[in-house]
Image 1: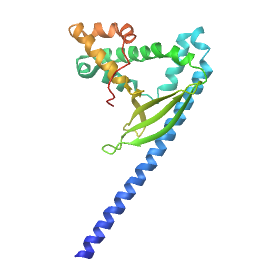
Image 2: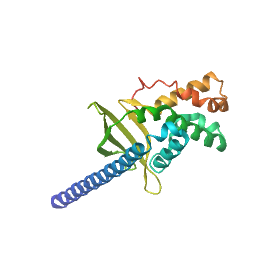
Image 3: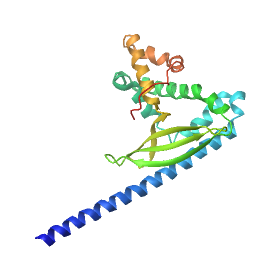
Image 4: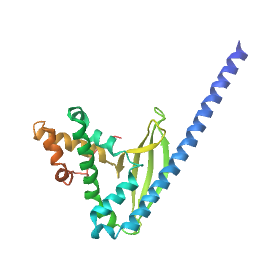
Length: 217
């Protein structure tokens, strides 16, 4: 009986070790995947830097093309709407996705274009123990002056096995949460008129305070 118990225990230990090793391999593959896509984006940004002033719309389309297969804007936008998403029609959801996506570009494009000679280092990916289809990826943005800024991508694996970004945390500020809180405030101020909130989102996004949201990925 003792020998059988020992063999069962050994088998469980080996299975657990194999699972940890497999997860570590998946994490490294994810890190490499994020690194490849991030460096491609940086290269595209450097190539199109001059286009921002000449033709902002062409710049937007180029960046959108570079991000479409890496960032799940629809999922992010749905989370920003939160419980109010259930009140929208499919057409309203589509409209908000486009407005939300465009507001991000309009808000941060100039900062990215002006930030010359920066680097992004993808440091580590971690598969979440409670859900192998979700992960966090730690990055570091290094400015030309040597300043370092921590960034965390929240990732999920969709039904086709593709990893996509679903949120980003910059220097401890949860970007998705900041926008969700503001959307909720706008809904309250406009007495639940969701189309009014969607119509005004471009201006609203410019006033979102990204200085103090709690990190809750």
